[in-house]
Length: 147
Image 1 (cartoon, rainbow, N blue to C red):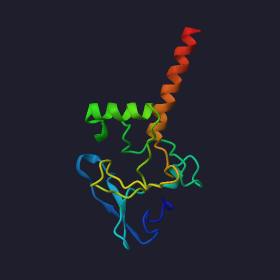
Image 2: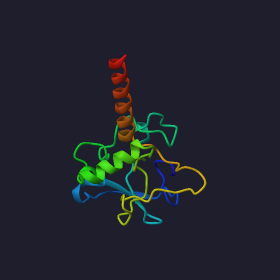
Image 3: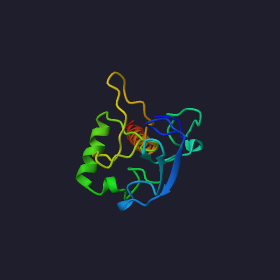
């Protein structure tokens, strides 16, 4: 992932913002396109990050189209969403989609970068982190009740 003002594929700063509402609100209404390589992605404001200087810092709040928000398209198939949450509870991770190339052909709708030697170098999703925080709070509350 490059800087917030660069194409995530070719690092070009020759970009254009496009107002293009997506079907069922899956992608953000405003997407950014690279003039050089034609990559599309959802832009983000670095000021929304907990640490604007850290390009992998999580956002302060979940995105306006976070998969974890109530009524998101990702939760429409309740069985599939339950499987996703179960895999996360079993140790999986969920990464933010902002700044990641859009890939409608991919099952998750984005072309997340892979690195065969190291874990993904991506921003963790704030909605996912809030889910984990709520689970931890619940466990501590249950332990306090039993003590």
